[in-house]
Each structure stands twice: as structure tokens, then as C-alpha cells.
Image (tube, rainbow, N blue to C red; front, side):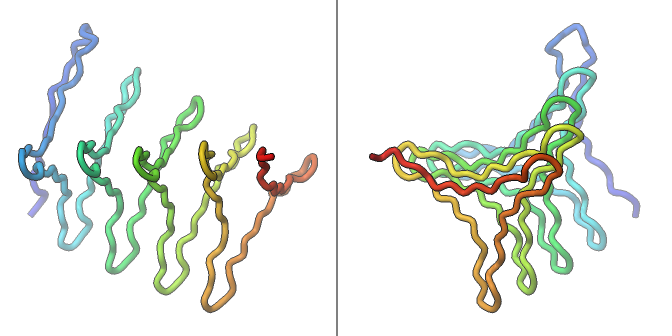
Length: 219
């Protein structure tokens, strides 16, 4: 009965302010190497509970002191000299009697300058097409599929709300990429509505809706 014992790994600290490069000790966890087979794995697994919630797993850096910034965190697979590099999967588990857990990717707030950026980028390729970036909502086997929202936040007391840019890249040789917007088809009902609407205002003229075909310099 009671709580199981803890296992604590703590590196040594330093309080020598006279040495500018004096940093706290480091902790290394490394799987074993192999010259002919796959290297050893490093597994970090929280505790299981037979009747309650499983243990939480926290990966975070400590807060910074009075100067400097908090430590950065790197989650990355290694590079490969021959073949694909390793994949990285971030996701929540499935549930047999409930909904799947949420997954949040959030940039922290600040009080100076522009807010921090959130960048999702597909991989580059020297021998084929670049990697795709896919945003897809969840499937509902007996009801509505999930919605997809792309929106900027409201502006503050001054300024305007952020703009939204949806565009393909330019091409130095050949056609640039196509841009397709449409609703899906239906086998027992009507196709979904598509609306393009300019928001209302209270000064000046109303906002424009402009459709412009591409030009050409080919005489």
C-alpha cells in the first residue's frame, strides 16, 4: 500500500559566479551502439494504473533566471547517409469508450515585440517533389466529420486583424501550382455551399471582392 518509491536523476549544480562559463552539470541518456544492427532504444514510459489514470509525462525546460531566456527543446530524428531519415510521430492514444485526447501546439505569449511564430513546413528534396503539408479533420463514421478553421485573431484596440494569405509558389520553368477551392460531392443530398463574403464596417466604402485572371507577356 502507499506510493511507490521515486527514482531521481539530478546533475550537479554550480554557484561560482566568477566563472562566466560555469554551467550546471548535464545528464546524458543514450542507447547502445551497434556496428551491424539497429542501435539500442531509449524508452521513457509513465506508470500504468489498472483502475485509474496512467502517470503523466512532462518534458520541459526550467524557467530562466533574471537574465537570458529559458532553455530550448529539440525533438528531432537523426540524419541518414543512405535511405530515409527516421520519422517522428506526435499524437494521442485511441479510446474504446470516449473520445481521443486533444493535441495542442501553442506558442507562449509575451509583452514586447511580435508574438512568437508557429511554422509548419514540408521537407525539401533535391531529387523529387517537396514534402506535403496536410491538414485534415477527423472522420465521423456515423455523423459529421470535423470542421477545419483557418482564421486570424481579432485586433486589439489599435491596428487591424491579421491577414490570411493562401497562394501557390511561383515557378521559374513551367506552370506555377494550381489553387483549388471547392466543396465535396454528396451521394444522397446536395453539394455543400461555398460563400465568399466581405465583412461589414462603419466607415468609408465597403470592402471589395476582386477576381482577376492571370496575365501573360507572351506576344
